[in-house]
Image: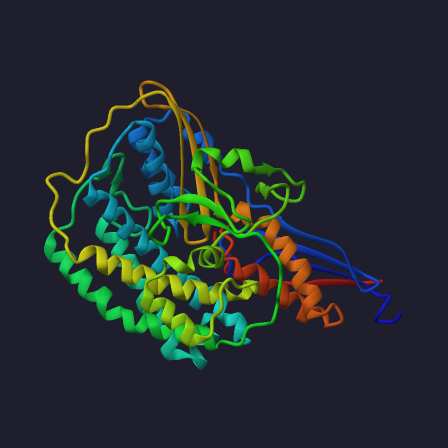
Length: 433
């Protein structure tokens, strides 16, 4: 049988170096992609159902358990949604420290993904240990930056994994000024390392993979959107969080336990590259200058630039956290009183992996009647499948099966899909007819 008319079935039964359990089925017939399915088969955890009947004061700690990598995103999104419903006005101190807290999560999550999950793919390495053999200084630097992000989360959350510092109305406690001074010094000291990381990431050879896609991310009138802002899209959309359902929809697909999200019935991109594409003008001037020096042009249509986008956001988060801690003073109280009320609460923030949207229906006693949470990975699922299809065509279906498998892995890991860690390497079964 000729290469042109062969049928190849590639099954990636377990995706490694991603957060969770998933698989990929790819069938090529007569030189064309006949079937491509990203299957997510991790069992549903029913977190939204668990929230029903819970008091509002419990929600931040409960939703933090949804993700061990980005618990701050879930906590802050839930808190802001309920605070808006309850008519709570946070103090300027709490507003600023929520952003600092969130910066810690961006720093640790982005650094983990760059150095342990994604970068090995671009150096021909099977894992971070192999990468450390050829780029030891860069990996050590990445781990130092990640540890600093964890330390910043611990400062406001009492611990970095499933932190417990957030409450509706602010924080349970305010860190002592001495701890803040120590953290601020560490953040300032890390800025040159983060700048070096951006330059290193910009030099990593990336596949040329031009694609058209709609980018969706939050946008703020003056700042780079992290924890506050409206929902924007690259086609001009700009809406508040409570209008999300009017433009975005979720649907079940038979091959996945996770929902697929669409915008005008089409896939869309969320995450660091979508944020940079929509918000470059909100970056500090020194970071914009650095991007110009590296030759990183925005908006980018190459999804592999997501790794560089994460490095840029690490530098931004360090810059923001240090700036906001410069004038730190102890507040009279780290929280304000809360009076619950019945109604529907919606909120959104930018988790490291992209837009995170929450909706809660509450009763007059402040208990959850029902909850709905739309995480970034479900929003990116359709885009991942479309990316795989287009990227494989750009890459060339004539490549050997093993090369096709590795390219598919690279594409999927580039999104940093949050579906709990798989620690073993991928197996591949190929059937030919």
